[in-house]
Structures are given as structure tokens and as C-alpha cells.
Image (cartoon, rainbow, N blue to C red; front, side, top):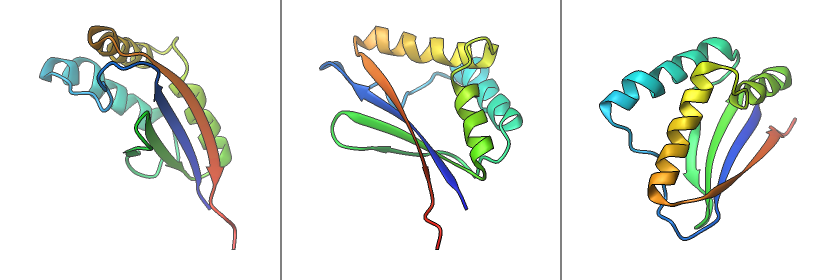
Length: 117
């Protein structure tokens, strides 16, 4: 059985999309790659890369598939823990991209479970 944690970014103005982000080589090396390595090392049970898609004209979604409810909750806590340097750096980079573009978002989260047959 799998659980799905959805990180939903909802665009709240007419600014250009900054999701998915285009990163420079320096940003990849200094922020994005260390964040990804940390996330997959720290959070157990993530099954592959997140599935990324637009859900309509104002919603951008990252769907993480995780093996257990406990691991899905741990992933959620980690993704929102700004005391973790890698998470804070990634959040700051995303915010800088948004500010530069003049785009604003609100965030929603959703957790679902595969149907049990």
C-alpha cells in the first residue's frame, strides 16, 4: 500500500510561473543537489522522484509516493522544518525566484492512500 503526499502551490496573482524552477549551475550545486541528497537520505520510504504536474491553470503539484503513513508524516515534517539548513536554503531560493518574478503563491498539502482491494 502506498501513501501520496501532495505539495500544492496555488498561484495567487498574474505573475509568471516560477514552478518548476530553472536553476543556474551554481544554484544546483550549492542548494538544490544538497537539498535532494538530504531529503532522500533523511526521509525513508520515498518511492522514486516526485510526480510533478500542473492541475489546472493556477495549481502546480509535487506528488510524493511514500511506503507508510509514518514515513509520509515524517516527510511532511521535514519539508516544513526551516531549522534544517538544506530545507531553509531551498525555501529561500524558491522565494527569491518568486520575488524576482513578482509571483505570489499559497501552499496546500494533501495526503491520500491507495485504495485497498
